[in-house]
Image (tube, rainbow, N blue to C red; front, top):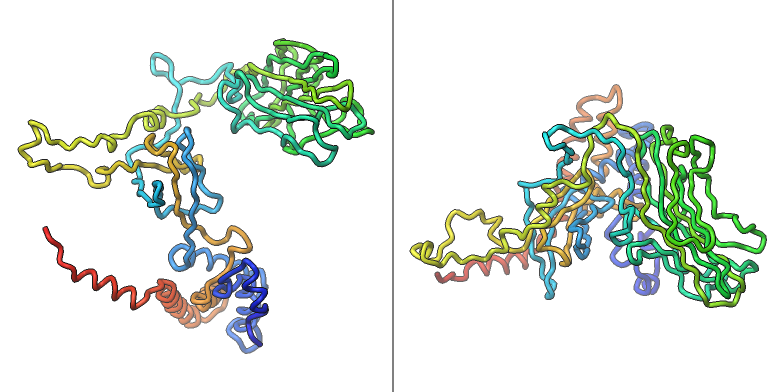
Length: 488
């Protein structure tokens, strides 16, 4: 029976081209059990789960230096000069930026820098232990809306009818604003319920104070007014947008399960219709006990009521100057968000950009030669280093705004589609699985273990030669170039 199970028409009109060169990991496991497991065979009995484990370990190990397991990601380097490591990243092969002609320019690793944890000190150099301090990032929205702030989906037209205007959640004039419209097909004159939130690590904290300044939509001819809330919850917010239906009450879906203050109230603040720049607080007896949690979320919710279902008028709620403050002195060191080392690295103009030809009164006697330079630094492409702790690549300032390509190694265990074996290495997989099983079983004769160890080594070597993709004609052409005379 042939291995081709699809017609030529199905193949050429599909989009899964060239896949015949691979065998899925599931097929490798099944074929190994057929060929190696059973009565009068090398392995008399074994569970499929055990074979699957050793098969995944084999594909992982072969991916590092035998399979063609290189992947690439391309991004435009943002102003933060950082790139998040891919989900299946193991190690990089090279990092480069691309010019307008699509040519790569290699970046060199800056091994003489890093992003250490910065310990806060007082004027005498003593280490600081944090007392009352804020625990929320970008609380005054002086920066653009970005992580660790997140928001619900905006502008959906399913599940509740279309909007009669464009809803937005954005930072405007250093305030987080919710611009909301009515939805024409609902029985209730309501906007969608929008949210924004930030995750807070409270593993070292006990009590928090909360305050914020809020503004809600005032009543007009077609707008009844807005409602705005902020509070603390132990449940991760849902990014989907909540909407009202005919059967829901006015407050339905806008109140999650809030944490409780010391006096037993919900740990939230609320602004009703037409309040402008009003600051509210949870302090003193209203502080929030988070001692039993490792993580909580600051959650903001916004909704606008309307007087008609057919108006295109909008209502705007906004919030600013959020403070979430720890009120105790902790027994852990106080650290800064970024280190001075990283701040200096990303802010300075790299020395490799100084293209001095050294042809002046001092250096000219050297006939323009540049002596004593490290070749890895005598280029203007830029540099990078990888902070393994936070899983990000840091770039020098001259790479900002450029298109960067990260070529990296994966272990090929990312998804089911990736767990496949090139047919040139299929035999190596069988030998690796067999050796691993025999080497870990009790009462296995040692000569069998050594035999399959040698066979595994030989099969891997053969697979490397096959997958190296050496073509005689290409090597011949390269060697012809070696015979060219180089004129000096």
